[in-house]
Length: 224
Ligand code: DC
Image (cartoon, rainbow, N blue to C red):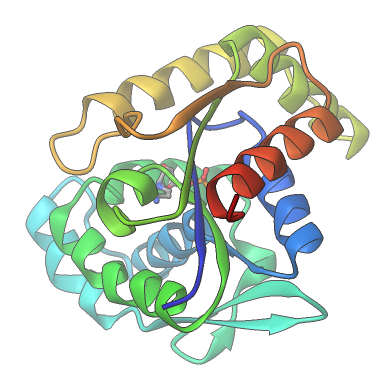
């Protein structure tokens, strides 16, 4: 069993940036579970699955063989043998992942992959239910959050830098909608594990948050 750091939290709290940096510092692998849900969503879109019908999602997701590889330390997601990393970040895939990820069969389909990665490697794994459902025995659990305003601002600046046209208020509304879906779903809702440490990144730099998590890791794992 490897050592595991679970980082859960809402969309846009900075999980992937922080998790990637913590993994680098500790020479652990970074596992982005959101990308796995996105790969299943991409499959459903390409397959033409009727996503208004949960039964169809439950049936078709089983044909999406998802696996991951590492290239220069970066996670690459393979969908039925094809590298789909470049296709996972579109708005269409985000919307579909938000609809399909609550379906129990989709979660069950990805659970073994996530647990196997944590068994065989030292991991920093981010998502929504890592500390609560996937790795309840993780050595370190972090619940990383930030206010919707700060998350919307960060996302707005990121999109603007990429030259994309966007409206900050629209982004804020969409973040709030995703929170409601993630928190309110019946299966594996987004919630802080009782033994997770709450870290609010609203007023902190990336370096400060990374340092805080490394400190928590050292405290939990170093013998006195
Ligand atoms: O973190 P992200 O935006 O890449 O996640 C994509 C979608 O997958 C999002 O709707 C939340 C969902 N997700 C989930 O349900 N459980 C996880 N462990 C990770 C992501």
